[in-house]
Length: 621
Image (cartoon, rainbow, N blue to C red):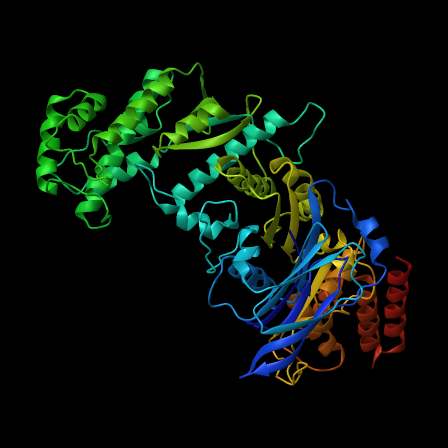
């Protein structure tokens, strides 16, 4: 199913606006009747021409597996993200949404959805093979079976529940993952758990790519084929800090030797395992004190803190090492709890033992990097280790035996594709053959070079992750590179209404979202990004492409030249220094000329000659 058109009556700053998502159609909905200020009837038309030739041209335009790509661009705060949020709520059957008209296409069936009393159709210009389906008032009949992916690195309070079936909204946004990750047995905090799960998704995707690419295929980013693992040393230091004030509870290690327990230079698997026990003990003590100090309220303790501490002190005196100590603690039935959230639950220690056995079975060596020992693992070995649920390790990427330092852009892309593949690989149902993929400002954080490649990377990679599927991409963006990759019929330009401007029904348009149909007269495909910035992103009216800080300083230079005193530029020397900094050649020459003219005023003949010679020299250069 492909989304062709959406009309929204009232949502956030969007008021009675229509959005066309396909270059093959140009729908327009016009209200014809209202009741208590709400639209109840209207007419839907399609104004596009040369349809048959356009369809032949756009067939396969974006490559296999991609039905269409639409970018939503425009002024900041114009409503780009709000359009995506409305559609997400619509598909999720949110009862608070306002009136709408939606047109979709599947094969040659044009289907119209709305919640109005009546819609008249004037679709004389539809394709010869198109078949118009009667208006569908019950969303659950068909649109409820639509699958929609949503990704954003931005914070978004519009939360949609994923019911784990083959339709609805699949939210792979950062906000959703941070709030939905389940905590492991031992955890540091919510963000640490998010990063661990994020790393796991990336590892699984990296394994998939390494297996699926042929020798001649090239992936646009560096894909690791190994992982270097080490212990999280901060646990030991923190454990010492939280109990150092308790003179009645000695630490199992001194402050001086703390690094030897958590960052020891391991020379063998046994020494590494000993440190794993040390870190587990440090975590145990840290969280027990956190419970006592009411910092963690979810950990159930069957005994009082003082009773547990007394037992621990006794066990510490009779056990020679941390492994024996932990065995004694977790085999003591008086200290164990059956509560699922209990830190002293025997199952927690069983997981630790499984990890130890897993590491003992590995045939690998330690590598010292940044004064810290790392254990090299294959991708599959790392996944097995993470799945055990003990969050005391940190990881680094490795490729062909060498540490791999990914750029910020590579990390962003690897994270995104890892999330995509986690849905595909982890589902227990058949994903719809056709689905829509929303990406809200996905190029954020990317270097301009990555922004230039961004759409091409999406078009080449998503069909690999979702084979035999048809994907419609809808992206919001501030990147002119994305716009230059699309025909203007594939770009929706938005702006905010100006003060005093009116909508078609006479209401005040200030601050409201307006679809600018004639914002860019020239083609966008392959267009110069300077033109796209000035037109597509509506910067021209706000001072062009010059930064506001530079603009203010240059304005002070102009004021000085025009004999308007100011506290920034108060001499010819200061004005000259600012002019020398200007990178735009025409502006620099004009200001230099004006400054020379100012300096010539009131000068003696010999001074004028000297200054004119300097002007001539500057011109020759």
